[in-house]
Image (cartoon, rainbow over all chains, first blue to last red; front, side, top):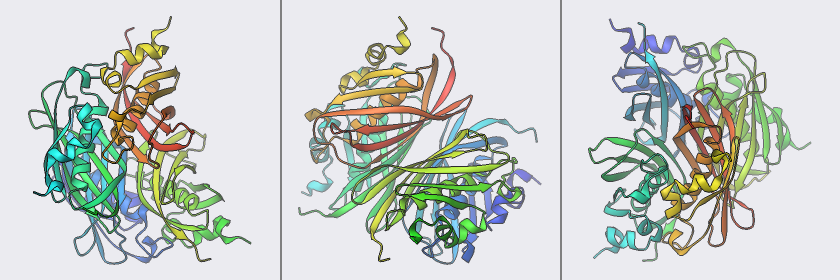
Length: 134
Length: 134
Length: 134
Length: 134
């Protein structure tokens, strides 16, 4: 089995993702999906999903998508726009590679609430550190 | 004729777009395309399309798309990632609305070179100032 | 006592900040500081502070600074650049208001490691929802 | 004379900056300033300085600051927040290095109107391509 495309494996080595209840659910070349079920500890002072949770879920999908090609890629920056608050249910992030060169790649990640409404948009860039040994 | 969807009209009132040879070529609800032909005065010190040109072309498509719905929308911020240099030919930017609420909307704009390779990715957010009088 | 400037109060109502061990340590008009001690559960698959932790700490300082003026301000977007990995010790984020208007304000947040080296730079914008009732 | 710190030299090789009337006015290690006088051709359809002009002026200061150390640095991405419209007078952008590592550096650029009010905030990252031959 190809562990690089096993989402369970990808989540399990990411201790922060585990701590905040986010997990990768799909992982293909240049694409990944991550999900979390909104819990009380995910909320900010206004009772909505915390920006840090939405960012971290998007970042997890981005990390999975950008490491889907057997090379180590490290995030160098990211931008997120919050369009709608999320107050309950399943939150889902989908990351897709949008442009790349030899050293860099940019991904767009859209975060959806349980009604599949786009609630946040994330754009991240990775620096490719060379092919994995694995 | 609906002047809000007439790309010629949209470009002509934008003096900076005219000055730098960028024009809107399509304009639909939540979508727009803008183009420019790379000229010497578009280049930076390295002989490539200047970041400011690529940004301004993306920004023009973004402005056209975000003003396609008969309400005035002003840009509040934008992020651009440059993935590949462009050294000649036609440059094309396509803007699509990705998420929105009552007051804000976020657009993704992809900038292509003449070979239709994605060379830059732009994410912009507008603040909606209310319906147009027109 | 002015609870709006009590950092303990600000952190305690933010359940996600509590869950990930981040807390506000200073809060003044247009300024705030937040800190966390790096724990194993903060780490990514490479053994470094997770991007989501660094982002969430910066976001907490940003939220505290932008809510320091007795008006509710909600984050509409943010950008973060990661410059250096953090592998141990105290992490500290300082947020300062850089520009504002009646409806929007932009903050720059710098994240430092224990040696006071700038490791990440965050830029965030809030939408002001009007003065607090309190 | 050290041409790397001669702002006139830096502007003159940037054909787009010349075309849009922007020029570098100061250039030191990790710092630069650029200016333009607002002209009619800088305006958008609302009669204000075009986002593309403000971005391009900030980008010029950023390019000058990031190339102030005798190594070639290329912009890989940038974010800009527009806080206040500018309708007349001198526009000034100041770029300062905020964080860096061996390969990357991040700059904050603040754009001021003639009254020295901060009107836009820009954050840009460069990739360092190695020391200049010059």
